[in-house]
Amino acid sequence: MSSSHPIQPWRCLHSRTAFANRWVQVNIDDVALPDGRSYEYTVLRRHQHGAAVLAFNARGQVLMQQEYRYPVDQVIWQVPGGLIDPHESPLEAAQRELAEETGHVASRWQHLGSFWDNPAFEDMVVNVFVAEDARPDGAIHRDTAEWVHHEWKDMKWVAEQVRSGVIRERVVIAALGFLWARGEQ
Image 1: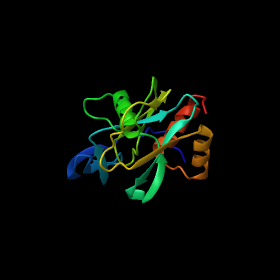
Image 2: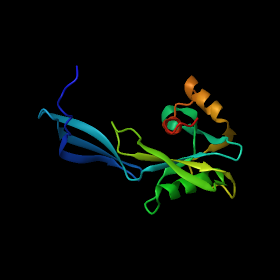
Image 3: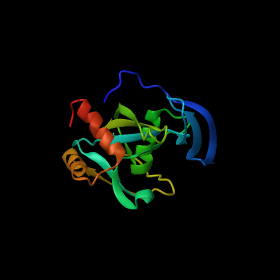
């Protein structure tokens, strides 16, 4: 059953921080729902947003990474990316992350799109970029907890891994969606 009434925003009555570290702040918000009832909502507030890279080499292959992800206890396929530092633009962060994680640079960059990471739970925005003509150019400088293996894959392989459920990582799936929406892939 649909309603002819527009959806109304909730109003925050009170917010308290339950936990905070350098990565995230967990807020417990008391909100007023549109019908006037009160509701307790847990929200992750991110101090930084994200940038990710779909890097293509001259042969049209995409640079994919494998990394162990502790929360899901699996080694997963993903693309290079990370958090945007306070002094950086999303593009600068994407360029830095590609270089740091893989030792690659690219000659052409384009913003593919951005998405909310999980708007039911947090406020993080992830910006996805396409980097073309990626090539090795320097040393890898990974963070302490980054144990990453990368290799070049055909887009057909990536799409098949998504279809079969091997790749379930949200940035890869969103990037494919952006390419599809642009009429590519």
